[in-house]
Length: 295
Ligand SMILES: NC(=O)c1ccc[n+]([C@@H]2O[C@H](COP(=O)([O-])OP(=O)(O)OC[C@H]3O[C@@H](n4cnc5c(N)ncnc54)[C@H](OP(=O)(O)O)[C@@H]3O)[C@@H](O)[C@H]2O)c1
Image 1 (cartoon, helix red, strand yellow):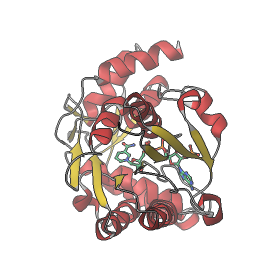
Image 2 (cartoon, helix red, strand yellow):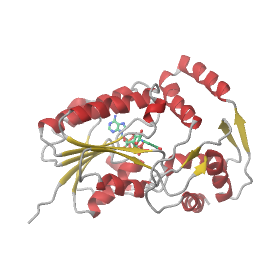
Image 3 (cartoon, helix red, strand yellow):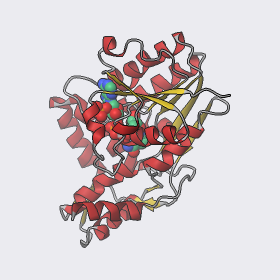
Image 4 (cartoon, protein in one colour):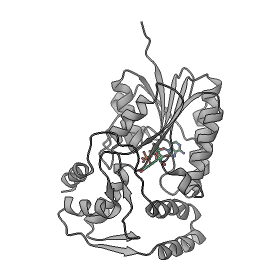
């Protein structure tokens, strides 16, 4: 007889984290979720990510920047899955505080509790963006994970549908400012398709897993799709990189954390992000769903 395994999901209230909760539950795991606010997961998220309050077995209410609040979090845990990260600017905390130190606090406990596998979500094309603060923080953590002695998997997604959802919100306003010509390509992935890859990563050797979705588009094409989904004629104004980077330097003077996160968004538009294709969900359908919700 096999006993139910317990997974700790860090970042369970996020876009990917909620799909991971659902996927681990469907595969029979006992889910312990680290969240800052359990109320948040009672409703569907902004990009259609599911409400998961009713399927979570155990909540740990904590913040990784407050070590006391996550003490004992890995007790009785078999697998840790972390999609925990700083994706919006915070007034005081940096990517290093959350993506690196926060995840490291969980890893240290996972090591002492002899957790059998740690799955971490980092990013694709990390070597091309190595100097960007958020990438540095992700990779500092990935390096520590690989040294920790725990069996590991590092998931490397190239871009989520939720990120493309930002283009949809801009398209709704009728106009998008694009940095560069938008000719670089990406095959973004839906959270539900990515969550399957994440749960599959429980098994097998320690490894890196690059992940993209089924359809390749230029960035300009993703914006055009967004305009079409909301029934508007595409109106895209291209800004040169030097201008965006100049703006970034000015932003950095009064808001370092905001500038750090913007620097990732700008750098990412400079090259292709085509990762091995997974999943069956299409960006066009995702935009169509967003359009029905906003009408
Ligand atoms: N979006 C992309 O295209 C993309 C591509 C590649 C990799 N990634 C990486 O994938 C990961 C997940 O991305 P996502 O889009 O799902 O992010 P998300 O929706 O912003 O979710 C981030 C999660 O981390 C939690 N979190 C943040 N700071 C925390 C703290 N101090 N203590 C406890 N929890 C904290 C958030 O909690 P709250 O709900 O309370 O804020 C949320 O559950 C991130 O590390 C991101 O860098 C994203």
